[in-house]
Image (cartoon, rainbow, N blue to C red; front, top):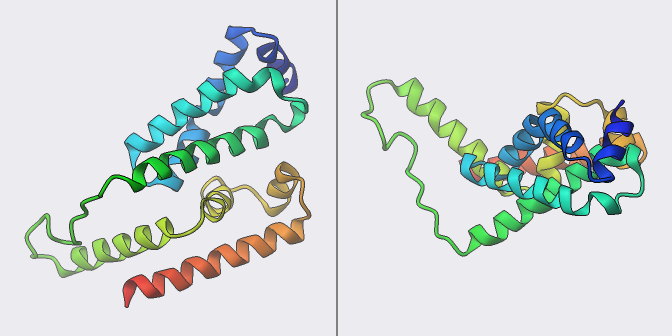
Length: 175
């Protein structure tokens, strides 16, 4: 049972914590990668997440909310990574610049992918996390609502707003 495992880890059982990490590592990494878009940054944020979880686990009051708490810590680690990144100038190659133009459909697909990534990067961290939770991890509106302890209608509204923001930003990027 997860609650028992969390309780044991909370009490300082390193083996229980190791099992929690193993069970949730992929999901945390996917969320971080989706928010940050860079594998190295996602690995750093994932590591920072689990360090923070280990340090703060004794303060967790609601054991049944562990996964929602873990998601919040992951999102916060991603925020910190984005703040650090702001000071670093990123060099991005234009779509198609790294290979000779022989296949126009490949160049077009790469440009579309670049436009989507750019638009997605412009969403808020919360919007990215919600879209990833629903569309990448396949969580239902009801599951997300239960995790966040908000009404399903609020989840639907936030998903709608996040999709609209992505569509609008994508139109701006593509024009």
